Image (cartoon, rainbow, N blue to C red; front, side):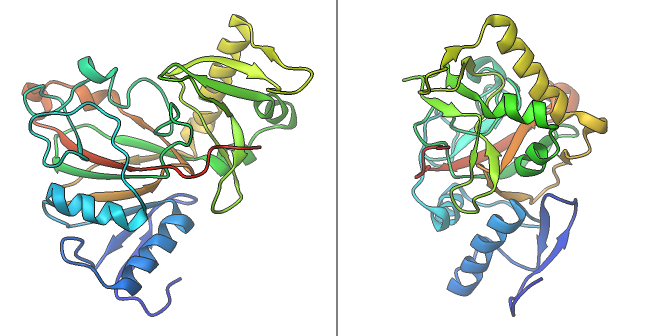
Length: 282
């Protein structure tokens, strides 16, 4: 799988994600290793770096810059270690909670940044304080689309989402990933105000409320098909650092991520996001 590189990788769940060991992100700066990591994120979509200890906010941002320009659009918290690091917690004194940010990943399956003209290209996560519970769920979008029957695919392929944030950009639900050319989804099941059928075509129309609900339910159903066979559930461990191809992977925070500190312990997650450079296009 690898080409003379100095870290080991183990596939943990087909078709999504790999665990990386044998590398220290706190000090790694070799150009050949950075290049390999960039390539491996594109190939595997999620890289899970184990045993990293605590990575500082400054270093988190340095690693993020391997993938492009950071774009920080989120709420700021006084305990964030860096202005570009989104600090999430189940304790409002320690980080942004669901009460402030509409669920911190709990509002529905999504990719990050659908409210932008170009959604974020990468998301990088580091769990600074690991609770007893609080999993993050990921799903590969290409395999999800490829699993659709013809009628369902045709319905999704005619749909465009309208974000309920900021300038309400309109994005195709299904489009081609800008780096791989593979089909992916631009979607946020909790922050889509409406769908438009056949946007900018003579047959363009706004989905009715019933059609909107049916499409949302269809996406949820397909994500959870066959007992969630495509879903990877990441159970955080101390020292975990994840680099995710945001455009290729949907994610969702388990309900336990907002369980009270008194019940599950303190949860502190740091996240950065990389500016998107390619608005979704058919």
